[in-house]
Length: 361
Image (cartoon, rainbow, N blue to C red):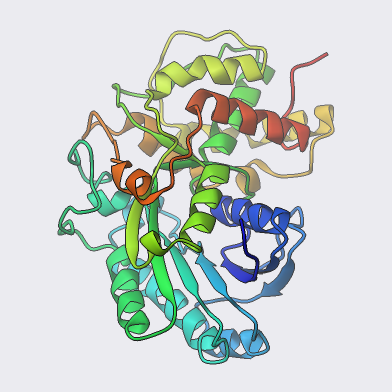
């Protein structure tokens, strides 16, 4: 990377946070991981337990941090009704307060701060409401819908004015990665769905409705883009879409999932995973016991990601969700990864970690 420093990663237990921590640790950086609870399994970074929605606690627990050069803000507050909560005022207010509390706590005593990376996503283009422009570009005017992205972005731009640090906003599509209890973890959702289907003697059935052309973002690729932005002048105070670089339909990824579990692909049959799969918690516990997996409940592993999976494969208000990545490539970041290879890698990684069962020997 050409330089090292001290990076604080907020949201350390999430898909993006874990990948960012892995990347910076491997490059020799000092890493401070922030989350309400210590990450499981441990990330290897120094951990600070803090509830960023609590301003006083944030100031108290972060007051001794004085060597920061970079902040990666990947913390996120989601409501139990995942997709319904995306437009709620209190969801927006909480996510803004968390970012404000973090910067209020660390900026004054960290004069060496050089860069803040802020995560957004395709909801910036209204993909959760209807068909977004194809492709969606960073130069588009803000969509009219309420979104905590705008509140955080405006705060960050105002705070940065005249300061010695810059910021970069990154917008991935569906992130493939590893995290327990993430609200938007497609790898965990499809992996658990496949494992339970196999346990019940069923083929792997595609549960979605309609066909959407879309993209994904490997968490490892996103981590490299974040690190690039933190050292690149062309990324200062800019917004970039970040995706793997290819496109797919979810139904065409089903054979990749089936191969990972040694299964046949069945005939498609639309169904709401968020309604059906929580009722298979006992089946999952049997899988955990029989395969000697880590003792995670189905709710702990997947949780609200069943809702996110339904949103990904069954929303009927759009036929494509595609983000232009011309801007970030022209700025100097041109890395890419095949999405089928990405999904296969993450499923194999979760099998190796004994989070998901492998193919019986």
